Image (cartoon, rainbow, N blue to C red):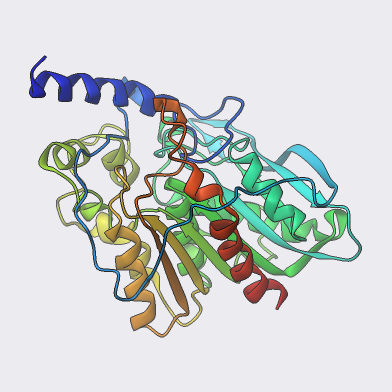
Length: 362
């Protein structure tokens, strides 16, 4: 088979697998979300990844022990309806799963936002890592949100996350939550939504729905391999991957412009600017922790760098870790069972827990 045919076959495999991808993170179970109209896939693997600047970041090579669950008993509350927005003329229930450690007192809240290329949002994703964080003394909520198959755009995504923040603050006493200490943590598309949520503290345009008497502001953001400027999402990649990511009317374009668009995210526009968390940074923006693999083939590593540098230039606390040789989280859906290991090490996860401890429990 020629190189061109091998690449075509690989792209076809990724398009099919991309529609099955739930979070690019560990231990994904269950079903949820909807494919976009026409079956357009959001994900394509690059064959080459250009090295990006690490001068403002910390480079690590996590190869040590994996996290282990079982330190603390955790109570699960699943399928809690936190919002019921109207989708295509009908109310659609959005649900979350909650993990509450069985320890005394109110606990800080961490809201986990799964990935899925804006095509899927499975709240059952990443159970091992979510449980590990809960066992460190945090109430952890994993949420679903509207996808592009449900007409979602960059406007509705952050609105859904903020609805979950407000709902959980309104029910803080019921679940033993310290309502004044809330962080968001996302991976891939979820990392992007976490960034949008944290940069828009105090921006009421994304506060719609119920519990509007509650604040949607968060006190910390963990962004694992999330996008920022979608017009540069493939900037570190080979031409074939760039062409796929910037194709007119694809899933990324649908996320920005809406269903049926013929636009490309590569083209500058007011909508592209409005979809970029960098443009919302203000004095109210939450502190950030970003993590990205140096060999990420789905979202250019420079995406978190752009956001990290922009945050620091505006005086916002921001730390960024680059995982040497790491790809885009768990890629076991492709048959690669090793890719997720750097993300599940005690070293990597303890950087996240240390950040949460500082911002929420310090």
